[in-house]
Amino acid sequence: MDTEIVDFTSLKQLNDCPAIVINKQLSDEFLVINSQEELEQSVFFSGENPYLCDLLKDELTIDFTKQTLLIGKKIIPQIRGELVSENVLQTDGKDYTYRIVVKNGGYTALGLFLFGVIIPKISNDTKVNLDLTIQEHS
Image (cartoon, rainbow, N blue to C red; front, side):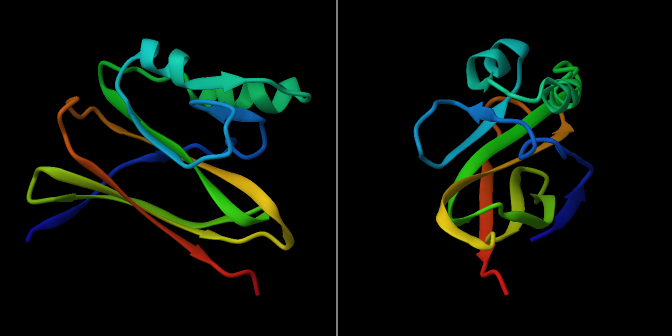
């Protein structure tokens, strides 16, 4: 199998702004978003610090004719998780894998960790796998 690394832009502000991906339920979600309409139906903002949310809204200004958004949330057992690493791989010129490693936070309580990247445009029928690993807080 031939695997190549895909260029991406990480969404740095996701966990600083109370953005809610898909719904307000405490559940895991992972989405491949290819249009402004899909984005508006999937990502909702409610916030106490509009400046941080404005930074995220700037990050989410995406040219969907040239780019695709991979975004999601994961329930973690300790709040204030931390992104350790992320990358996007393409295998045999077809399937994509969004690989992410998150470190558990230091406070025992269920929390959500939000993650997302912007990649070059892919078609709606492209298969995208999520490979998410949670590391224990040390």
